[in-house]
Image 1 (cartoon, rainbow, N blue to C red):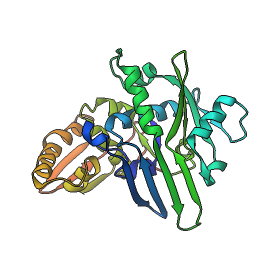
Image 2 (image 1 turned 135 degrees about the vertical axis):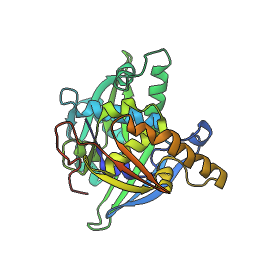
Image 3 (image 1 turned 90 degrees about the vertical axis):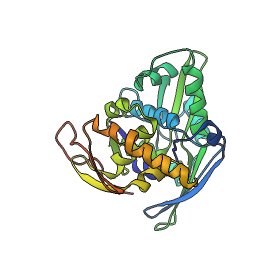
Length: 281
């Protein structure tokens, strides 16, 4: 299981199923999450592959033997540089971050991908994309503000990669922020990239053992960009019904259609519990 901060999953325009041409567009949007107003900026769009790398990093961070909690007062020059590149601002400066040491091939193994010569370049490019996304958050209740990049990293000469994730993600791993648990084994079995992205959203909004209904357009707009022609919308809805949602039946989720509404049931966790999130903001 991997713990991911609830907020990062519920921002609809953070990760998208995009073409190479669409990825080149700059990212800028503002969304609300509870009492938080979140502005996100990036030099490119984040793809499903970027999300998979993001998910793999958090899985490694969740493993106690790999994760290291780093406070602002840390004396290591390496961690100091990583924290500086994370561009922590305002209240975020006071919080902890979480650091891991890994490699491109190790991240590939987490995703159960075949290792080949292209992997290091693909992973490093994805890390560059993730590092280039900045959050500015206003808490409308407390009037506090937070600022950070999704992550920072350094690529060492020996092939090892040092990665530091932002405080919101680190606090979710510790159970101090609202988080979603995602079964990485389920993610690995989803061959469709849109299904993989949709799986993360559904894990965030459906507790294990529960069923929830959705409009097909709601699911479609979570995966793909909204500003498309009617013909593209019809094509995407057809793909959602015929190719994407059937993938969930292969991982023992229940999917039932009624006109433009789909009822999706998530199986209980393997330990038999039916609660996947904790309360919080």
